[in-house]
Length: 213
Length: 303
Image 1 (cartoon, rainbow over the protein chains, first blue to last red):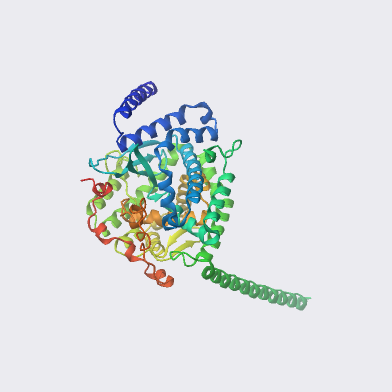
Image 2: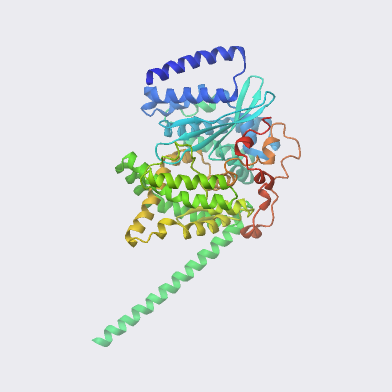
């Protein structure tokens, strides 16, 4: 079983590497490939299995992040407040929000690594530039959790700009909190609050490896 | 001797009464303060009684930390996985009855029939619901409750309310919850009362145990846990009313280019106290409800 999985992944990986060189990967294929690759690493990497949070964050950083559009995500989370920010603030906000999402995502991944994922049937038109790919996390105990990705097409491939867990957008769910922070302390106040949150949840030894990037 | 004792007793009742009155005064003052604080702090139209809600939220957190969570963790520890799954399935099977009724009330006879079929199959082939054999047979499990039915009928959310122990609800969902409890087959069990209460407790613990994992992710994610839970609850309910395919809110699609006025008009807000009763019924896109075609709606503009 395991051997066959590895074989399959190897074939899929080579095929996908080849495909990438020639054409842009379809959004549903992209989601599936990245998910499977990350889950396989989570289940097999000894350091991660031993609970190394840095290693998990690194995995997310190198394998998952390149497929996310964080500027768009941050803009979505800020809603109308985004327009009133300076370019410098936009950059700071995006960096901090990105770190926060990476932490959240890594954390969720390590909790759910033993679960299986179903990929819902997907269809799109050739001209579509904005699609939703639907998946489902099956837990051995408890209900399956719908996990959907919203992607948009860009010059360098499809990029995820929102993740919805059981109908809850991980991005827009911050809108009210962010608006409240901005009302209280301005945009800089929000940046500060995000920094404080990120440093409080930093994996122990190297705090801002993700933020510095 | 006797009279002394009775006098003492009288004194004691007196002091008791006094302290009772004091307690009542304190409670009233706290309540008033909470309400005032609620008025003062709430900037969110969906959460007009934020002050009270925050207080209740932290009360619930305390109770959870002290009692419910440890019990759930213990349950998780001692109960083998297959048994836990059996427990979840058993109560899930009973819940399917009410889900079926709600699907019928929501005008989805197909789903209602499928849910009734689930109950029939799982209660028999699945041995009293301990095994969920209907799902692999293609009868998907649905989650419906009366709050969703009301939402489907066009009743707005109303204000967000944190109930004691039961946690986040809206005014509409609180009404729905009352109906859910009233029709609860477990509560209705005419067996010995002790069994009934045990069953209710077991169901609660099993539900809580399922949530243990989600909790860490929540801690990692939330800047303000109260607001995070509130907004997630509201989003989740909105999605549930539309069976997982809510129409995208107007501002989302317009964001990348950020044209000047695309963001100002979303979700018009009335004065807060009306929301307690009626809420924003315009949050519901009636058109989207009239064409319940989940799979197609999933990929908008696919054709």
